[in-house]
Length: 498
Image (cartoon, one colour):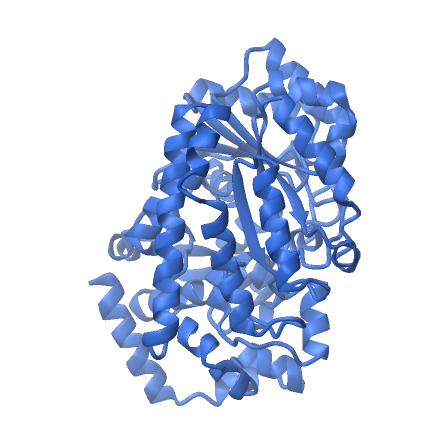
């Protein structure tokens, strides 16, 4: 059989200008899940293709002609696109559709309205049985694999969209449980691969010619001694890359030996969650750090030439507009290489989702807006539009024209050019959103600015409404007008596969 894996992207992220702008933030890469699952099927005698919509257009018409099975990965913001693709596939072919991923694992009944099978959790143990028809349940719940070393490595030979950066996961899960996070819950419990297994994968990517690599662990330095050993092996075996990104926490700076090894192994780009400078806000999200921890980590990164990406969460209940702006200025004063402001987003499966449901603060019914760049709930200390506008203020304030020259002096001319690109696209995006909020009726930004969501928040999407009123999602789906749905589906099919 021929299986096509698609990681969907929202309409905004499929827009060519957005794709171009994303090249300045990082290098094109692919999530490892479909590459592992596709490799399992390939080893069993099937053929597989993997596409990342963020990085290139999917030749859907050609895929429909030869695919027996489609597997679609969902995050919350990409779920509507996954469902759209699933409905088109069903209307255009006899191919079976499997849906998995974080969002489908949190709301499997919703995904089941569009899929033949929904895989809840990690899919390695069941993918072959689902594809070959031995597992026939609509919703298939899996147990997390205990021995990560026994899993095959990602197979990049089946990836059909651009990629110049290899992703590697040395662990699954996270030792922390931040209230806004879903991945630590989907991939629980926390598990590690052996250092030998990790080095084997890094060796493969070096042989394949990759110049860039990402450690995708939620916290690569959670086990400091293990992180040190990986770095030592990378250094000793000349397995370093031009640039290696990783996620860390402020506590990594407490270990000077670790910081030195990270530098020598070229782990030279790190995202650290500052989130807020407000101690009460940090307590609310269970972050487990304070301002002094952040200052120490930033100072150590600067001394070791590790470029810091400062992550902020905008809209925590305890934070005011002044707190947000103070945190943005703080990140700039730290000489952070990049800023990643993320609007607090109540994802299904996270504690914040449960909290906001209970408090009736859910605002936006469209899952596509749940991408950490849009306000989807009613904040405590700002209006929804004020919080949205603070996001644009953050990126335009941080990515100033003059800051590019300072970054160039610190890290080199190439990074100054990249920073100028981020300055251009940050200001372009902010201008476009603010313009739409004033004049483009019907857009998300217009509705948010003019309070339309507040006026009609009870007319929520099926899942939000059903969760608030304890009505099964399938019951709402049955109530849809069949003729209207068929007409819309035909229009989508003509637009997307012609």
